[in-house]
Image (cartoon, rainbow, N blue to C red; front, top):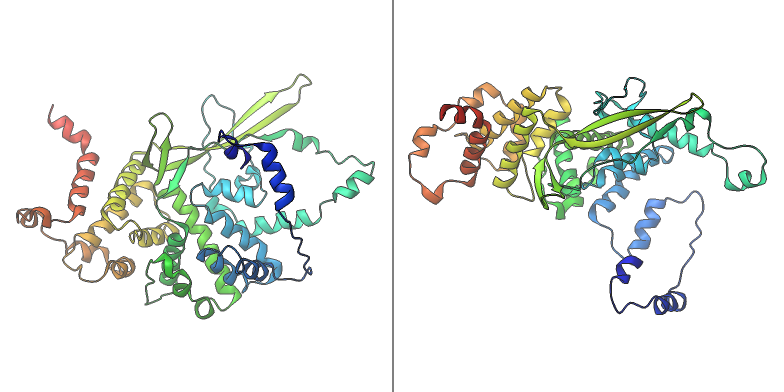
Length: 408
């Protein structure tokens, strides 16, 4: 904050200091240890800055969870709520974790001139168990007063000393949807998984009324199931759904899907011991199918309503419930977007089509597509939806190699 003020030519740090000491009052609030901090925070904020809807929703959901389990689910929520950073960095920071906590034993990684890619993913981590273990260890930690009064050596063990973790590396990224919108898509996936017949609308201003916590999440088990689903969805979202990635060289944003890369370097010391340095970063995924997936999602993003992006619901459902290769995943999304936007049966609202398509027979749906030749020969001009032009651009890009070869 101070650096921001110092950029102004008229800023006087002495006057600013005098203002802080003479005009700013700090209030200490003492609460019993048994207080429900979510309720207290909500009540205090009702007298000042209002909480966002998703913060109120978090408070109402966490009330349903037993107090001894609440912190772990709260940390998951906090990690997932920052949509403009990758979830592995978020959960590491809010949960006070290490890369070794998240990605397990790194002994399988070998030093190399290039980056060593890890096949271990966050989708294989029991995140609740991990966070509870960290909580338990924190509770057993020694107080600062005990350390100062004791002559015991509380330095790290030799094993800890020999494993270092470098800074996390990632370009500046921005999500294509907000956290409230993401929550509504996860709610729709939750409804699909529980055989719901009603599909929630994606309207972030109605977040609280759409969730209706009192009716839909009235037990601890339902609430924990949903928050765990948020985690699974966010891990899949960051792995397979585009973000706006900022290029410092080109000074512009572009759509890209980046992958996690874990590497380890080993430094030999003069005394014969070794130090391991573990680093994690996000880099461009160069797999051709992932590149096509990125282009296809970019087409969907620009051709649909920016604030809803209803196609994300069925795609998230597929990501969470089916273990597919990159090639099969691309094929799934191609079929999904074609049946959603190019079928003669498209008479219902998009919020319902993107919900019901999960239960429809794929082969039968592909037989109900619009006849392309007759449709494109109608000379509708501006009557054609934007989707058609974006789809044409995607097809030309995907077949670019073959088209260039044909033209010599």
